[in-house]
Image 1 (tube, rainbow, N blue to C red):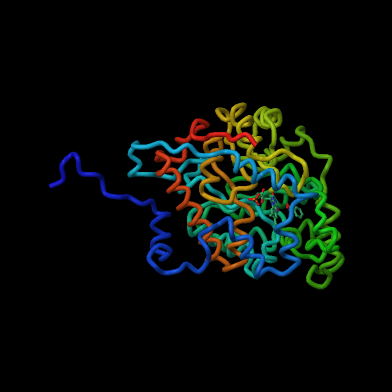
Image 2: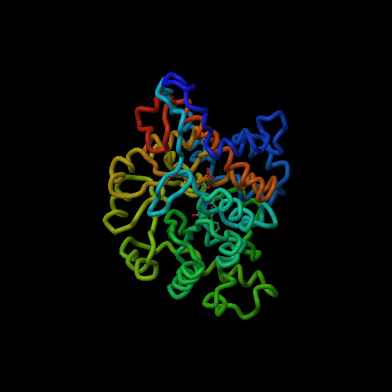
Length: 397
Ligand SMILES: Cc1cc2nc3c(=O)[nH]c(=O)nc-3n(C[C@H](O)[C@H](O)[C@H](O)COP(=O)(O)O)c2cc1C
Ligand SMILES: O=C(O)C(=O)c1ccccc1
């Protein structure tokens, strides 16, 4: 007979159970490494030079990408003991959406470079775990194809606001009609950053007509083309290069988005409290603290260093998401502790995609969630909302 001193049954969250069920800890070797930080090296063995040269490198000397990782290394977790973490729950509610865990698949363009099924495989993997797939404007598959692949899974649309307002409205209409619920407007890439790896290869996938499926499938964009993009992909690439850069954007233009999008709008690329404050003042529903994985402004501060000041300034008034440099479940924990409501993953799921398509992306997500679950529990927490700044120790470099 169980008495009061009987410990509750050991409970593993679904994510951890999935890992166990996958055989990773049952004596059967998993197909891919469970060391997510090691995936980049594994993916480098299967990706060709063009794919690798586009996906992995960062802007300039790579100093911002290194700073992103160093900022995670500087923060150490302070585990607490004897607080009953037998029952844990990673689920959260984000901008009206109930999610199984505070993790999204961030917008990453041109996924066919990593795997022939590209975004379709990633959207299926996201749907299998119930996590939102954020579909990039700059994709290898169209808004509608990705919606169909993702089925009932949550989907968000990331907008690169094109210089042609009619085309912009057309993209937003298509995304709404295809069931995308949330809009992520990326602010930090009105022009592509200085990326020596791309420049030295003299190769940008877009100019060969890759990664512009949302453009070539759009009736408004197609009016710019004399020939079908299948017959003349180079001309389609040049038309893309005309509408993509939009350095004239200002805060005053945001009401235009509201007129054409009735769901939540999140601004991606915020790196300081002042801009987060402007986002709130302009009625935006959330921000993503992000430096684009170090691919835009070389020399910019580490995204994790920008997080706490933003969360302290606006965290009680708006939703704060985070990305850039997240590689492990422990990293997710650190971002949550510094005030993020959820995190976006970039390169790590692309590495999973490169290695094993949909199954590879699912593997990355399951490992990430399982490690987050274990990190939370072993540090004395039960939910993703509990850890605060006192869960971390900062090491002075
Ligand atoms: C290959 C690649 C393509 C990307 N394409 C986009 C994009 O189309 N739109 C966007 O908002 N961000 C894009 N990003 C940035 C990611 O959304 C995210 O901010 C970044 O990858 C996070 O850093 P991480 O890779 O260290 O996780 C891209 C990143 C990579 C690596
Ligand atoms: O490569 C990127 O990081 C990216 O976001 C992008 C944006 C526009 C065109 C090409 C790539």
